[in-house]
Length: 560
Image 1: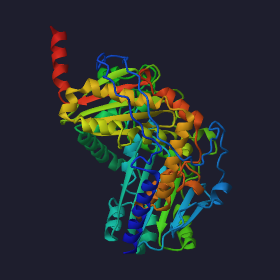
Image 2: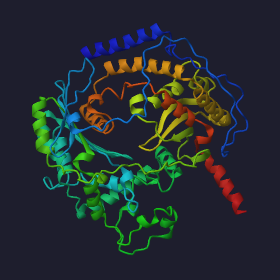
Image 3: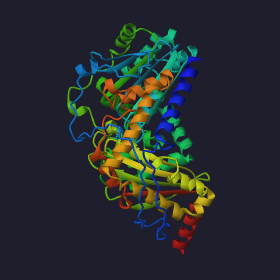
Image 4: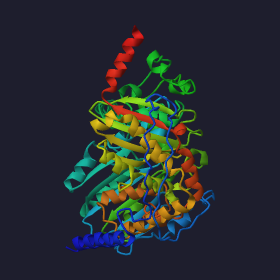
């Protein structure tokens, strides 16, 4: 009952705020493109697009205090002493207790004591994803994630971990991304010590046994085959394939049996396999001593799965002191980090993945009946963007759905089911801002006009000056503060997983606050983003099933 009343009060306050500020867009920004006739010179395969000029009408605004900070200032490295002494900033209504600590082996941990939960949870984030795969073994990080579930020295029998969790009302899961891998579980409070011991063994003494590798390679291969018909997966692979072939982004992250199985010394790869590789990486893809899955798994584990490259989050109803004791006992045996700083590897490839690879358009053939237009604008990240929320500002601006928006216009004309703006890629050395429209059949018939309107809409955002952007930022801060103050409680495993991942990118005192509320308005960062939002810097993806007919016709014409 109390939760229902709190939720109702939250929405009442939001409604009052909207009424106070004057409308669905809060009257802080009322953008309206001066729609002209879209340029008819656009073609799906052209490298440039002629766009009409567009402008924005801005409503009046009550300025909200913002601070413009030089985002190029180098932030001091977070020391263990600073980490352990941090006090987590939390909403006033949050009853949970938080503690940040560093174990003797260097593992950084955040504890969450929640008196209202009846389930315990934990998550370990390891700062390596498939970008860490050696070139000769695509999919190794994902394969390694699978193998950790197949027995440890403390609990060697396969399936005992999942069985223990299931018997105690819980479950577990994991994901492998490009730059991170995340493991998490939840179980009843009574099972917390046992679950934590079994979970920690993943990172203390995994078996990585030869007996399980063949079977698990086939499991990874089956997962890959299930992904192949997925349009979202194929779309992502298309973006990866457009990147520089020598950049980590170009890697095949899932892996399959062919990329993971053993290869004897001197065994020549097929010409088909070698033909698709960039000359800069061919040598490292086919080492003279062959490929041994078990040896590669153990080398990968030693290189990346050590305390300094991990972050742990634990949620329980137990007191902080008791949680700390359990964590020290369970995770104190995680291997210490290497003494050499260069062993703490960055996922930055050292060069931009889309240099001289923008200003292009690609037709993507879908498996299902999909009509979709995506425009990506890849560029190096602006400094401290996670603190300034600079990209979120443009996402808010371009993706809003109120009157005078592109979303409203496309819906009104019956051309699109939805329109959105946000991250297409979010990497250490590249961020691709993206605008997307899911089209109706009518929208497909007007695809040239839809694309021209999308470019107009983005182009209009590049003309906004710092004063206007600061005002929009102020609006966001008001709403984000309310979102932070009235954040709903998540499931313990979701809280643990999000916190362990966030600790890779935020100091512990800001791990709750900063993902929601910006630290400052970044004028120079906004200008850099605006400079990147140009047609010449765009990658246009047009996804539809009937591309297949056109491609077949082109192939027949070439054959003749």
